[in-house]
Structures are given as C-alpha cells and as structure tokens.
Image (cartoon, rainbow, N blue to C red; front, side, top):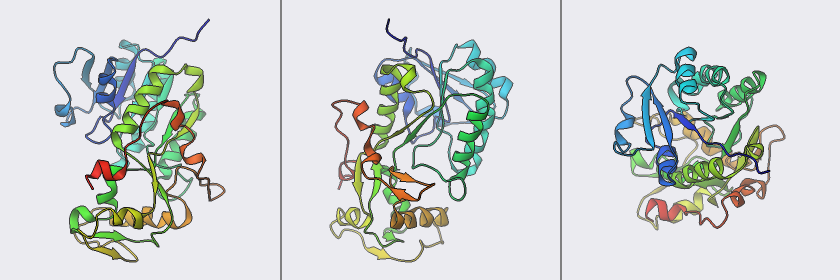
Length: 289
C-alpha cells in the first residue's frame, strides 16, 4: 500500500523573496498564507486564486497560530521568516504552535548553507536543536546564496561596484529563487512523508567563484577587491563581508560541514536529483548577464 502524501500546506513569512506561495499555486495545490497583522507583502499575491487563502496572526502568539493551523488541518508548515530583524527567533513560538496543532512537518527558514552552532546564522542551528527537543520533525533546505542576491552581497546594488571581500577564487553554491521555491513545492507534494521527516536536502543551481561571477559583467561595472565592504549606505555590510569571507574556506558551499569545517563539492548538489528532469537556471540568466 502506497504512503499517503501531504495534502495541506501553510506558510509564514511570505515575503517578496522566496515566492513559495506562487510555486504551490503554479502546480494547483491549495496553500494557506499566515501573515502578520501589519504585513503588506500579501499584496503581491493573486487575489482571485481559489487555492490561496490568506489569514493574519501574531507570530509571537503560539495559541493564535496553533488555532489557525488546527482549524485548517495543516500537515506542513513552511517558514520563510527573515534572518534579519529577529525573524528567525520567532520560529520557536511557531514550532510550539505547530506541535500543539498536530502539524506533521515543519520546514524552517534555512535557504542558505548549513548553519554553525556559533557565529553568523547560529539562530538557525539553535532552532533545529529546539525543534528536535520537542519532537517536531523538520525538513531543512540548503541552497547556498540566491542568484538574485549577488548584487546585494557584493554591494553592487548600493555602490554600482562589484566588491570582492575575499580571495575570490573559491567556489560557493548559488541557486535561483524560482528554482528553490519550485523545488520545495515539488518535493513536498510528490515525495512520501517518510522521505522528508528530519531530513536535510542540499541543492545547487550553479557552483561558481565570485571572480567568475564578476567576469559575467564583462567590464560593465568596476570590480573592487577589498578587505571589507564599504559601510556608508550599505545595510548589514558586516554580514555581507562575513558571508564573502566564508568563500575562502568553503563555507559558502552547500557541501560545507560546520562541525568538521570541510566542503564536499558532490554533497552540495546531492538532492538536485529529487526534481528529475529539471533544468536549473544559471546566474547569468537570472541577472540578465
């Protein structure tokens, strides 16, 4: 007898970047979007799709979120809350709500590389430990840096210059936002739950160095090699610099192991095969280079 697939999905933190609700709608799967009371991000979602339902809730209230999840009989709760501004920290509350409501799987806001126990993005590691402690199964998705974020991580967006705050010759993992969103929707709706519970998946749309990416601009923007990104007018410059410096040791790869501090290039894309036949977008295609 075949294993029943997950049927009911909800997402919190549906901002403008990861686009998971759109991916679900594209395959005709109903999805519930739980937005903050003051969020305006839902304005980008279609308002005439019968498969989309938007409700509002206080993310800091486990009882409020739990009631919504229970009422809608949600199997899978997907979190895309932002790493910045304390978004990831509220996931403990969301986990409590999911556990109380009988949610079968929680997809936390990872969408980067395997996080360390200390340092940049350690909150993501701490959440994984917490979810396990309360017996809430998780599916953690590592995809490296979004193609779309290359201008951001190099401060090209603010300065018009492509800054490389590392040696620039070590490869990292990059994946298009649309590919990540489509991948998540695909595996959650096609794979049996037993393949997804307490699992880490690693995908990679393209493996490249920052120097290789800078060459795609073909001299149209200045390339600046520096020890750190400029601070003036560059929000979270220290975070961007830290991420770039991770390239030098392999920490920008989906094959990175924060415990052994080693990178496995084959491991970085080991789960691409779960989306059989899919063609992954390149950085050049996404950025129009």
